[in-house]
Image 1: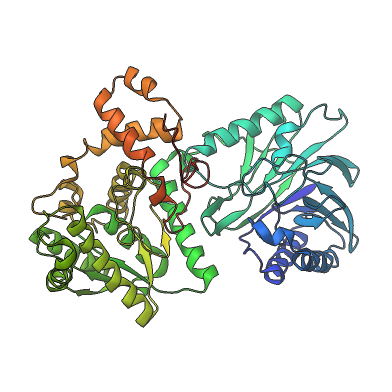
Image 2: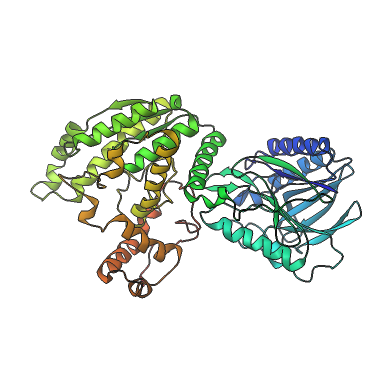
Amino acid sequence: MKIALAQLNYTVGDIEGNASRIIGAVESAKSAGADMVIFAEQAVSGSPAFDLLCKTTFLELCEEHLERIARCCNGIVAVVGVPALSSEGTISAAAVLAGGEVVRMIGKRFITARREMGYLVPSHGYEYINVDGKKIAVAVGDDLNHIKDLDMDADFIVSVNARRYGKDVLDYRYDTLRRIAFANGKPLFFVNNVGGSGEIIYDGTSCVVDSRGGITMMLKSFEEDLAVYDTEAEYEPVSVMPYSECNDHTRMLYRAACLGLHDFFAKSGYTKACIGLSGGIDSAVNACLAVHTLGRENVRALLMPSQFSSDHSVADARVLAENLGIEYNVLPITEIYKSVNETLIPVTGGTEFDSTEENIQSRIRTVLLMALQNKTGYVLLNSSNKSENALGFCTLYGDTAGAFSVTGDLYKTEVYALARYINREFGNIIPENTLTKEPSSELHPDQKDSDILPPYDVVDAILVRMIDEGQHREEIINAGFDSEVVEKIHSMLMSNEKKRYQFPPVLRLSSCAFKHERLLPLINKYGD
């Protein structure tokens, strides 16, 4: 028996376009001699669809195009993910298409992702189908993890999924797939979604696992792919686990970031991006990602030095822009800054210089960048990072502004790792001084981040324990970190939820992103 795995990039709400892509893959699978072809969860609708899943007209359109797909399924069986209306509400189903008809709907029972809770209702769970004399268990999404008492005469397990990417999740995912296949003694066909969908990235990396738990076929990561697996053929297990590609942490982050940025622009109808270049590491990495993804002709930068900006920062920003070959303008903000402060004298006159004056600089820069966006259509990219977002080390309506944040879910040390990767791969585009100088927002003379914080490798080590691993302060202190530093970081983390509520959409590259896996009440007196 030949089974095709179709890993496609769907767009939420583009039901007609998604159906056309599915039909194209069905025809390709037929041409390759496949008896069966498998698609991802909610392939017809795109995922995550959120409140669209509650719209009857949306579900009816999915049903209409599912029937259109079915009419192409003569001589082949297709398993296609689709949301469907049941008597209890909307379910996430695997539709079985054969003989030109929709012959069966297998609904998901376990609703475990926050992005689905409240929109989907549980169904009956995994069921069996027969294809060419083979008995196949079909599971949707997380139902795969709850397969129990699988029939001994079952031949295969098919899993249709929409598993999002997060750094370090691939090891866990494939360990789980290997365990399930081995425990049940059945080959497992896992088909995943691929592509960016707003803040989410689906990595693809669909695979086949044999009954001994060895992965014998793996599809591409972060790309569309279609492969045919012959169940009668002999395959050598992939020799490296979790494969050299998955094991390269920084390269995977880079590819994920590029895909997320590309699809945010392409699926939103945007083509051009603007960015404020400061000479710092965050804006440098974001500019490189934008050029790689959108093309240098579609990226424009503003360099906006104030009286507190160092000469080397402006020089570093110029060198980067010229290395990238992007259009840029130098717009000094010193006179604007002085004018704003003079205008504010009736309000602030006689008070000492503090964060008020510091933040004015950042907000002036945002005014200029948004003017560029409004006048020319260059969409503003945010250049934040997770370390600063966690600590509130950012200015509301200033450097927190933008239509999309590519690196906002990456810690500062990960941004540096990306910068070094970019220089290795693309020829030292980012100036060495940007990589080696001490981080600074240059909000007052000789200001450095280390005036307030310890080095970022220490900050990030603590934040990872607090945020990603959920450790209490006592655990972190007992691990050898300075108690005063831990308490200070904890206090900054807990007191800045109000800022995180107002951030732009942040591409989710970790398994514990703010506002998703980690969401605290806007008003919170607990603070432990």
